[in-house]
Image (cartoon, rainbow, N blue to C red; front, side):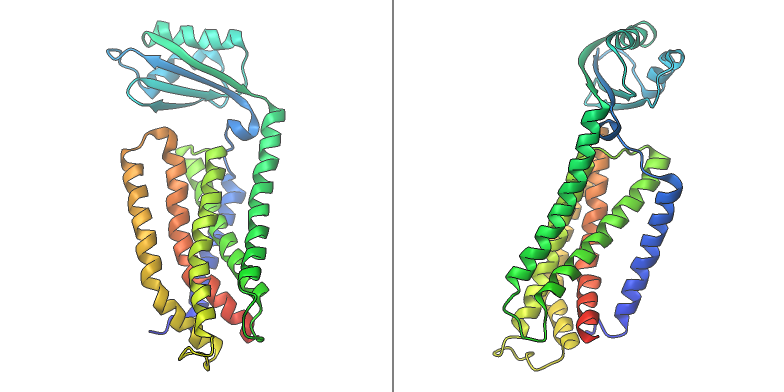
Length: 297
């Protein structure tokens, strides 16, 4: 089975089209930042089991309160979370009383406010964490793959893996700009957690393929005398079953969580699901073709 050859141009072209679509979506729709990154307030209420609460009823009850950036999520059987632009204690009491009077009996469980200074700090730390993780991956791969034939560069292995990771992140971000626009998904700290987890899973699959390429270049390997494209193709065929089976197991778990889980974790699960699919694809059809193309130039 020849997975490379002229086919590698098609892999890169397909990814390029998807990423370009995502970038256009980002420019048009942008991302909907959550309270963690722009500041705001959260109110959590617990309702009585016999009351008939709904998202629409709560919004109608608060229609005359002039609440900016209001988002409402249900958690559990009788729990509701309201996210909005930063408010004070008096405004919070107005909201709670309006819900009690117009919808039904409820009890306040939590009230939190994230100021702009805290959200700015969290935004900077999130970007720094992702960049630091990428640089750490480059140095780790370069160190782990230092014992290679002279015509192979460990740094090219590391940078090829990072290009595949950037590919994954751009697709997830592009997808979330569409989801933010049409379904109201927000970018919060859980989303950053999902991105960092995606980085780990994706680079794990890539390292498995790269490690097999290294092993097949050893002098005792039957493929050691072949060119890099042939060795890389053999390595992909040898590891593809393992990569697909591992990723499929995780994807099935995520689908179950998405089906049975609550609304509050839905954006996190969707981000993980998109990232796992793109990460599996990129480790096979992006990182390795880039590595082969780079070494053949």
